[in-house]
Each structure stands twice: as C-alpha cells, then as structure tokens.
Amino acid sequence: MTTLLDTAARTTAAPIEHRPPRLRRALRQLPRPAHPDRWIALAVTAAVLVVQGWNIAGYPTVSDDEGTYLAQAWAVQQGHALAPYTYWYDHPPLGWIQLAVLSWLPGLFASPAHLFTAEMRVAILPVTGAACLLLYTLARRLGLSRWCGALAVLLFGLSPLSVGLQRELFLDNFAVAWILAAFVLAASPRRHLWHHVAAGLCSGVAVLSKETIVTVLPAVLLLLWQRGDRTTRKFSVVGFASAAALIGVGYPLYAALKGELVPGRGHVSLIGGLLFQVERPGSGWILTPGSGSHQTLDSWLYYDRVLIIGGLVAALALLPVRRMRAPALAVLLLALVALKPGGYLPAMYVIQALPFLALCLAGAVRSAARVALGRPPWLGPRPLRIGALALVGALAVGFTVPRWYQGDRVAVTADANAGYDQAARWIRADIPDPEHTRIAVDDALWLDLVHDGFQPGTGVIWFYKLDLDPAVAKALPQGWRSLDYIVSTPTLRQDPDALPTVEAALAHSTVLVSFGSAADRIEIRQIVKSGN
Image 1 (cartoon, rainbow, N blue to C red):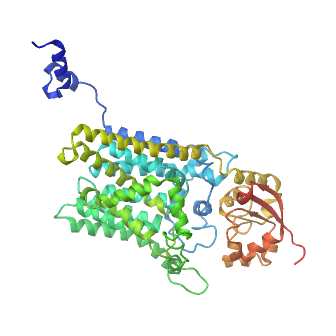
Image 2: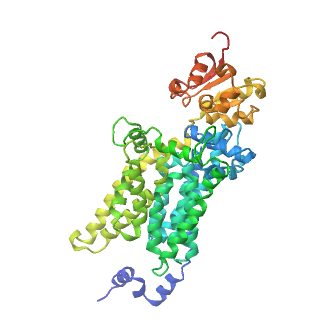
Image 3: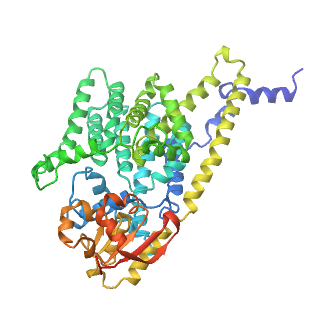
C-alpha cells in the first residue's frame, strides 16, 4: 500500500521533468535574474574594489616608482614634456599618459592629511575594475562556468599580494588591463576579423604601457589561432600583427622625429634606453638564496603562496587542455623570463602574471570538481568522491582564508605612509619662501612640494638627478652647496655611495626634524654650507 509519505518522497527526489505538470509549471515560472553573468561580474568586481579602495592612501608605503610615474603624468598634463626632467626612454610613455587622463578622479576624494602621491592611487581603481570585468568575460569565453569565473576574479583581486601591488601606480596595472582586453577579443565567439584586429590594437597599447608584457603576446596569438575560423586564420593573424605593429611603431617614430632614435653625443636615445634595460646589472638567479631575485620571490610568497604556487602548478597541469592552453602558456612564459639567470626581476613583475595565475587556479578547481563529480569507476562510489572533494575544499579554504584575511586586514587598517604625511605637512608649514628654496627629495614627495610652491626641476629635485642628470648638475654649479635642504628617506639611503653629491649633502647637513624610527625614519635636513 502506497502511503502519502512515500508519494512525497518520490516527488521530492524526482527531477523537474518527472514531477507533476502543475509543480513543473510553477517551478519554471519562478523569476530568474536577467543577464546573470552581468550581475555576477559586477558583484565580484565591486567586492574587489571595496577591499582595494579601502585605506588605499594608507597602505602600502609609497614607492619611488609611483612618484616617478605620477610626476611624469603631471608633466604631460601641464604640457611641458613626457617627464619633468630629461626623458631618457627608460619606459614607453603611454602608461603615465593614461595616468594623466585619470588624474582628475582623485581630486574628488583628496585630503590634505595625506601625501598627494598616495591620494592619487584612487586613479588606479577604474583600471582594476576593468581588469576584473575583462577577466570574468575571458573565463566565460574559455568555457568556464559562472562560479569559476567569479572565483578567478576573487583570486585575482583579493589575494594580499594583489591588494598591495594593484593599489600602486605601477605601469604594469595598465598593461594588464589592455592585455586582458586583447585576450577577450581574441576569444570572441563571433570570430570576426575586426575583433582580431582590435586584439592587436589592445596588445600594442599594452606593450606601450609596460614593455615587458610583450612576453605574453605568443599566448594571445595562440588563443586567436585556436578560436579563429579555419578559412580566415591567416587573415586574423595578419590583421592582429599589423594592428599591433601600427601602434608599436609610433614609439620609435617619435624618437626618430626628435633625433633620438640612435645613440649620439649630447643626447639620449631610444636604443640607448633599450640597451640600458638589457645591460643593467641583474638581481641574480631567482633560485639562488641571498640574491635580489630570490628576495623578491620570498616577498611574493610572504604575501601569498596559494596564488603563486597553486597557479603555477595549475598552469602546468592545464597546458594539455586546449581551452586553457593560452592562459597556461602566459603563466609559463612569464615564469621562464623570471627564471632567466642573471636577469633583473622587479617586485612589480608578478602583477602581469596575477590574472593568468588566478584563471588557471580557478580552471584547475573546476577540472578537479568535474572529475570528482563525474563517473570514473576507479575513483570509488559517488558519495565517497563528493565527501573527498568537500574535505579537500574545506582544507583549502581553511588554509587560505585566515591568511588572506590577515593580509587584507593589514591593508585596510595600517597607516604605512604616516611618516611621509607628517614630513609633507612640516615642509609646507615650516620652510619659508619655497619659491626660492632648493630641496632634494625622493620621487614620492616631489609632486607634493610642487603643489606647495617649490619650483619643479631645480627647486624641488629628484635626489638622484643631482648626480645622473647633466642638465641638473649644470643648474647647480656648486653641487651640494647649491642646496638648502635634503630629505633623507629609506629610498634615498639605499645606495648613497653610488651618488657622491647626495652623499656629500647628507654629510654636510643637520637634522631639523625626524619622523618614524629606525630604517623607516624620514629626516628633514638643512645643508650646512660653511667649511669645505
């Protein structure tokens, strides 16, 4: 005899198509969100931007590179040139030109309590938001599920390593957004030739934003070849390459028109700048303990081992998988460059790998879940596989979340720039007649002092220009005696022996006020010009 309980049990367990017609119609009439991909992408992007934007001016400590790029963006905005001093082709200028375009945004949130360089970080948030949306779109176009695309964005944006580096005004962040746009266009389901041409344009802009992103271009070409129509692949490749070259050729053309393409007496040159980048002293092999590159790797792993190690292992595992081969190749190409013996490895280099590491790690999680939830008989009964998958997932979450929470908590609460803030306020209030005062500072303070009335160029001076820029040396005929003040910061004290004028200025100066302690202290020193 069939009981009501038996009937209810069968009804609950039955799939929708086997349920009574009335219940089936009711389930199908339940409201479903329109455009779920759009809402998911916006939700995870908003989560990333909240974490990255909170306390963005307070953490991490402003870097010399940030000050350099921001000063160059200021020079572009003011119409002076591509840099406040001699532009010597150390990097293509498109990255800080984009920063100049976005420079209006921080003015909406600026506060005199914070260093201007740190406040300007707000300008990088739209770039991060665009990168998150593009990464989700790329994940979906590669055939990953919605939850997997959301996971990739959260891995990319919430890792403590990402929260630190993506907040800073590094050119790599601009390059990442453009190269992700190139990947998205190369993976376009329409397979339209103009999409592939646009992918080439985005690739060219990415390279002119930060030249080292050129390492990833073979992965873009691989994806374009995979997704292109067989009858038009060759046209797609030609269109891609032509568009990228059209953008890229503008840089040497600019140098040629200025007579600065090749080295010559009395001027800088594009080829000279490239040779400097190639021949500059390396930071050692990344696997040699004690080398500069190894210390950089240690700093990356200190902030996040999960994304770096997990993403690298996932890239190796997914390289044979056709749909994931392009992002996996991008990770491996960047890793091979980092492994070059004797090369120079800057701390921000890993920014270029972060989206592809996140995408590969999310793809590996998806593949593992599909295997465990599928029906391979050699893995045991399905309930056992589900339990094992749940256990592994719980262990992974338990290992990752507390570490990420602690790292991100520091990022949203620490005030790493308090010393710089105090130094800028003291100079503003206590140094008289800034228009006729000469002061040497690191790049992070430079723009603050320009806004406070110091003369850009030879009034407020990047400290290393005292020894390395002939135009500055010519304007200061008495060397260190031409200065009135010098601000000693951790950046300035890194290698004073290589800068004799800076070393002499420090030796012939007295401390007026100091902020911070130990190695992080910032000293405002007055030059003592009496004696030798």
